[in-house]
Image 1 (cartoon, rainbow, N blue to C red):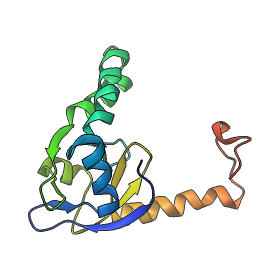
Image 2: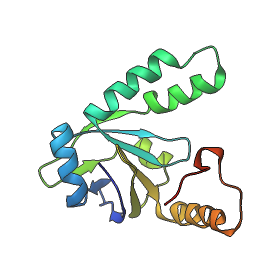
Image 3: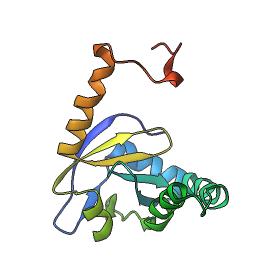
Length: 150
């Protein structure tokens, strides 16, 4: 289970050093095998391989190729997916195409989301945080959150 937010660095070879608290989950759940893919919000999604496989099957089976929006989503999520082996130092080598897609540079942010991590460009994440604060300033909550208390 992934939760929390961590600022991380990419080295000159585009390797992400996975923080120890997340690294252990990747090692236990996926034996260090990670699937990294693109998300429509211009971040990257990192899944332990066993978490990704059922999701990928569902995407392929259930999303219609005849609907341009669902086909585009499938092309993004499945098409950009890369299987990556974490190295002995707990690093993940990000493919250049994915690094460019998410506009990642030296500093980035990892955000735990339960079964996956999101990897964000730091400035884009800060902007997203600013947008999310609107909920506490009287903006109507999505219907799914009605009756949900923290």
